[in-house]
Length: 606
Image (tube, rainbow, N blue to C red; front, side, top):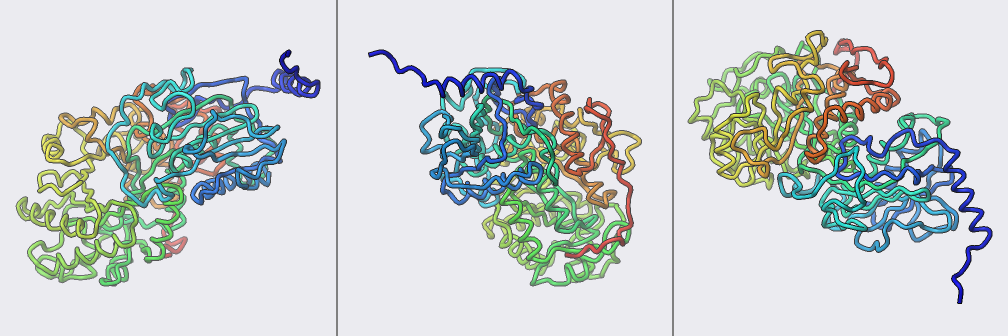
């Protein structure tokens, strides 16, 4: 019997598709243009996918996967104007286009065509990892391991990485990895966790034209470049810090910062909630902390604070985007606002005046008074109860007036109080000489990579988050003429933020002890959301790439070219950014440099 011959209609459809491929322009974005650089990129220029008006997002019945499908629809609907309904993957219609969220555990084909017209697939649920990025510990520290990664601009055989051949397995993709397959008839994102699924959606977002960031419908050919991406992070902890103590930022501003982190696969937001200039988190057992201590800020503005419901809103919003909130209660120093509210916590029990300047190191709670430890227990207990993530940051820096032995005793007791809440301690690297606590993480903010005390703490079991002040402190000026920011750690342009290796930065500290990277933004000179964004962008994506991408993809020339394509995206999204001269932007950015407004222009309590 002869082989079945294709029907005339099938041949006609194939010919039409082939002709269409010859006549249509290539995708405006290349598959390798993603930031952070993926582990493995295999372009297929003949397989570009065009999103049609009748496209459907199809998803498995898993609630977490469905939520991510709804978020994807929310990202795409405003600019496309398409309805993009979310439907169960089983409810397929012949000839439809769909975004299919496919379970790694149950998928057996290699992203094959769904239905006669195919589908636009985008993700896979979720398995045991759950849906809340803030709900559990980050997992094993350090690099992903021996994955033969491939540079983002390179082409390689599909599945050639450690993620395996064929359909990537959930085990190989890890807690946050994903696989994205783009063909002419389907886009499919596969992941073994909700976090991986979410990160894959962010990659798909970047592969669409920049106009996808528009808040209103745009006439555009919504094309996704063809090929395959297999991707997972190098480090488990990738974050940024926002100082809301020096200047207070309302909830909506913080939520926008969460969006910026999620866009670039950063998974932790560290909130610096307390300092000399203001106390920003409500504590029911010590109400004057906010009622009195929350009413000041640098420069004499009205300050503000978060109610418990405000904080819950931030945490929930972040968790939906797989960002874990890390609250910091800075102790024993940086406590003037607390001492104004409760003078009995001060050495000598004398109330200090409110402080609205920018000096450090002059305040501390009384380490010799047992009431101080009752205060610490109450505060960390209430904050821990509001925080589903595993971390609680104790600060611990710049307690210059506390003798070393007294400081050691205070920190060791405070660590025990945090442990009693079920949380793991993070502290600035000044904690290093003190006694080790189980799981403790040191956040290193030095400027010299030779730090024997931190190396010794690592030998005793500590892990490290790297925040070198002269590389990732985002309150540093870009250049001498940057209108806001500091320069005590030097000037940090985009290349300086990008061109270093977290895995080898600290002498005597092995890569496996590095939990990850965090970029702090202190706000002594930063007063508005526009100024926050100006200091974040374009350096934040550079630091995100250090935390996510395999070291083999590190290439400044390639990165600056990829980053340049994000300028139009930020402009379309209304994100302020610094037009860094070292980046070859496709057009001269038109965003004005932020100017400082009066802190009285808007209310600052929420």
